[in-house]
Length: 524
Image 1 (tube, helix red, strand yellow):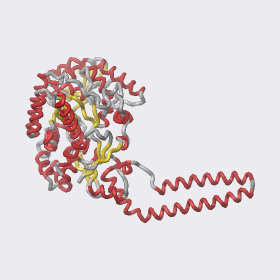
Image 2: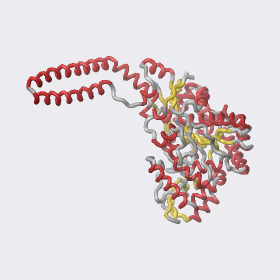
Image 3: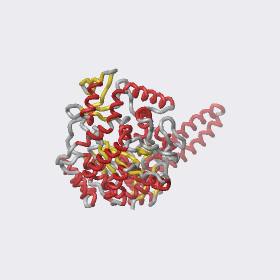
Image 4: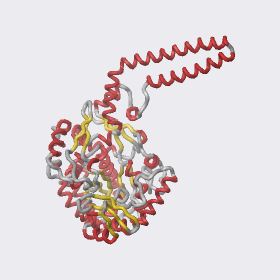
């Protein structure tokens, strides 16, 4: 397996908070409990009780029947019930599995669980199992109703027709016949492969976004027993209701803690990732129409949409129908770790930046902070792309970087030279007429040479322009599509279908901590 390692900053548009955390070797206190690649101890034993652990294991086992768990996942569930710790990651339930980063998250959780289990065995400790938390309660359907696949010369966006009721949680949305059209289109790029054949079972009319996504993730990572959880239902919310209750009755205290944290971030030159306004809360409420609305508060009064609620009414909803109240992005990891015996959470850049705020909620509500570690960040290099990189002797950072071409640089240099020569010859002429004439002759020769360089560069570029442009476009399409990192745009299913199940093994192998940055991984 060929891998090249680059600093994570090679990817554009990263937040400074994320870069400082990932590239640092010292703990970025008070925002994060450990430095990501320092070898420091991970979370202490989880406070999840034996009773709750068994209840969660029962819930996961029931869901596993929906996702058709194999032997490895069932064995991991038994270990979880008996005391195993968990390495957790998660993502929205994207169409056809979503972008490549979804696979990278799962692979990182699996690899870390393997590594921690090996260390635990040496010390007589407990094993670790990988768990994937499906963000089924998110309600922005436009973020998950499409997926992008490449062909040789273009990108193709596969999208579900129609829109569900605005604001409904995406996990429960059932497919209608429009999913057949998506799969028919996908057949051109993914068809004729074992993965595509199975996709037709998962992504079928009557299935939901959650059931299809969960079945796909469980199947792709079946050899490692990846456990998939959908925590949107009543039982999960009942088990985590203490956190949701605290978010209601301790709203002022939590708001003050977040406001103080925002000031700490600002004092260090960072900015808050989630805006905490005067009326913000940490909760959403599903109203009578099924829409998920943010809960706002003004003193003791609460509001979702146009309707007002008292604290007593919200607590009654939580008691009778807990699934109607759900956490926002800052509270969700705390809610998650009130349910699961989490040793570490694997997150992407945005999640890691959010965590600097969530950390105060962890300490206030759970009395502990789960470490958050970066997922594998990678660009996959297909054989045809590798050939072009070698032909033109370029590396991934040169594709990702936005730089001027040769002609533009020479033009800028020539213009600067012309300005300098004009000022210099005028000054010399003011000193002596003869000196000025000599200066004009010399300046004319210099201008001639610069123009000659321009003509040479123009002719050279003209000769290579067509082939270079074609090759450059192909490289950008494959490695930096639409000026986005490949992992954030291209469907993971594309690589699984084209290169087979070995891709999952490749990603798990690559998700070690030997390269704390961005990896270019060659496919074969």
